[in-house]
Length: 169
Image 1 (cartoon, rainbow, N blue to C red):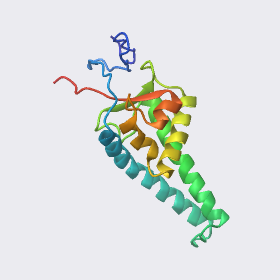
Image 2 (tube, helix red, strand yellow):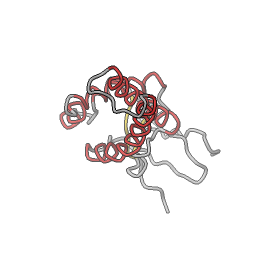
Image 3 (cartoon, helix red, strand yellow):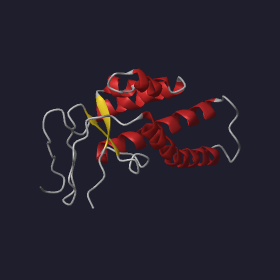
Image 4 (spheres, rainbow, N blue to C red):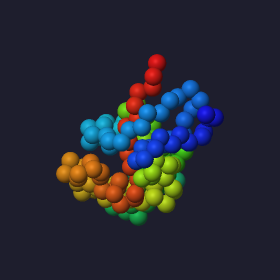
């Protein structure tokens, strides 16, 4: 199989872009909430770096003075940080199905059939995930009650998060 081709492992299984040296063993079960939380915690650090760079730029553009609380400048900063974090997530998911925080835990986002999800569905995933986090993570905790262990953003966007098996040595 050539690098970048899709491996199709049959009914209900997921298929992913495969490097020439990798073998994919299908995973049908969604990851436990703990794996999702670990990936989210790891993804906090690239997000913080993005936020710090954005805040530094806003400060420079504001004559090196701090932004007043709840001013148009500060609200704009929050919005730009949220948008840039979304760009990071969507581009990462689209490019390889994973953000930096998902890689150590072998998590990957795909559509229901295992193919790479479209940008439209990934943006919807980010939007619903944001609402979920704003509601104290309710959409994440929902996975404990859901029969298929899906979060709100999995359900609403038609995407699935799967834990990949370890690579054979």
